[in-house]
Amino acid sequence: MGDGTPNKVCRVHPEPHDELRTASFRDLDTTTLYAILKLRADVFVVEQKCVYADLDGRDTEPGTRHLWVSHDGDIRAYLRILDDGEVERIGRVVTAPGARGAGLAARLVDAALTVIGNRPSVLDAQAHLVRFYARFGYQQTGPEYLEDGIPHVPMFRGAPQPVH
Picture 1 (cartoon, rainbow, N blue to C red):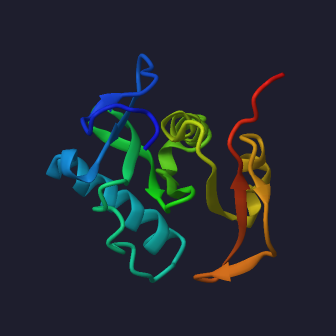
Picture 2: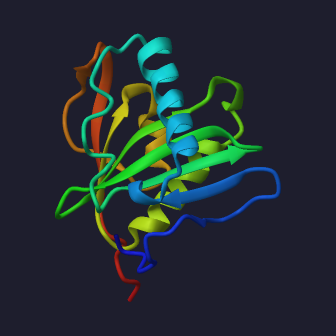
């Protein structure tokens, strides 16, 4: 995945109150996995009213990394990184309603970019979040489209360029 670390649960940029963690699927304990899937269902399926197959089989792929922020065992924010061959794909970015506005999504994206390292990456941003992802170097690569009734925009971030 670019970070060279073994597939173990480890801290990424820990903070005093929230723990930012990363793991492969096989290293997720069942309680954490349940909490992640519950957060994704609560926000994407219930709150955003998107009926879709969240369990798409990609969570279990060997190259997938799961990143989350927890506080006292509660999952407050989450994203996953998929290995799409030539690029890494960031997806399923979600923050619990009670944790929004605390900068957790930005912490997760920063951590994801550390995990990704020098590889290019893509994501499909909800249209209202294009400026948020642009702060991390992502650029729109195609027209806006509807996914599950929500406007999305494809975005790309190239590998960092060497300084001369």
